[in-house]
Length: 168
Image (cartoon, rainbow, N blue to C red; front, side, top):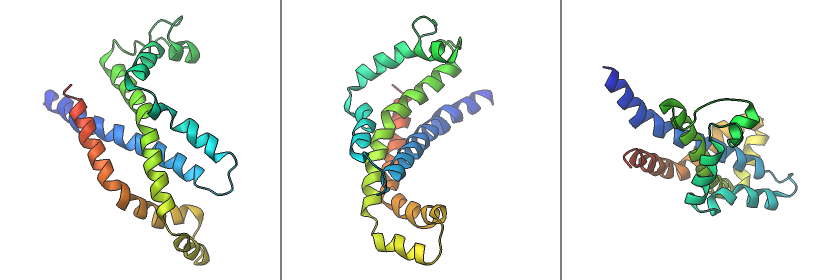
């Protein structure tokens, strides 16, 4: 029974957490920078897609050094005053993989969600405002369903991709 729980955790929940975290962070940034009142949106958008533009192997090398257990070399342990064996302990290694996957994956979701948000007609949002819907209610009842129609297939494909990475 213990092996089955480990199997479910690794093969179902691990990819689900990876996909949901990248989607939620990407969607949050997309909502933040989709507002017309923001200043310097172009610069911030460019900075947010930098992790997506860097080669994966370079990012992996950088994160490996950041997760170094030694406080002299490991930026995360040094900054947070921790002594975690990120890559030696199986549980912390999974957390490190999720953090690295979040760093690599949220720019993609940010770009996709930004495109989906910009495709929503402004009159739909104006109608919600006229009907008295709050900002959060508009996001929850109008924007998210419309975004998920466009992004849903990509979330399924991303889940399948993350699931396939387990076997590498």
